[in-house]
Image 1 (tube, rainbow, N blue to C red):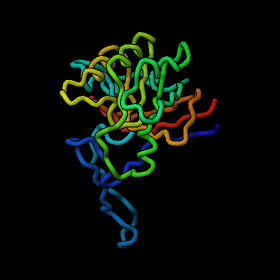
Image 2 (image 1 turned 135 degrees about the vertical axis):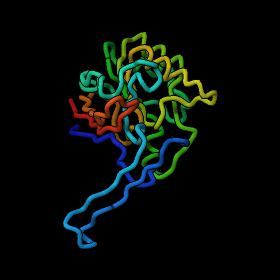
Image 3 (image 1 turned 180 degrees about the horizontal axis):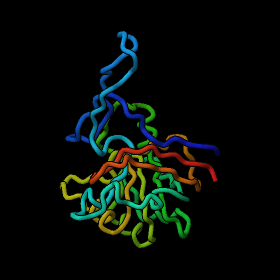
Length: 210
């Protein structure tokens, strides 16, 4: 199956979660203007695009992005497709992952929407249910990925899914683009920016066929 780049390109004005810092990329040195080289200024939030949530994002005193063991992010993983029209990922979806899986990425209709309208933010994205989060922890899954900028949709502002997963030892990989990626086993390669004391880290994530 070769390689799938499942990262969202970082670009000026790209969609972000409402309230997060906007992305700004500005050319400050330009060959076209007679400078000796090209150089840009990049301003973005720590949870921009494809990114990793470490425990510190919600857990006081939890590991920061530069402290997490990269072995937890890299290795065998399974892509699980969620039926179109589903509003939530349920425990039944999780049970389609093979026994012993440690890393699971959920491919939902979000990816198709990103592919069709990459510059739009939509609030009615497919998210993970709290029951599904509990099931993931019961199975010992230590990395959970989703093709939305946030793994949960929580109108209360208490973020129970984040609290449950990050507090239970699982890392989160959010903002994936899984359009065209089949349900199958892969090798995941994911390296977040090494931000000292970071509560999150934008990353490049790719899947390698097994």
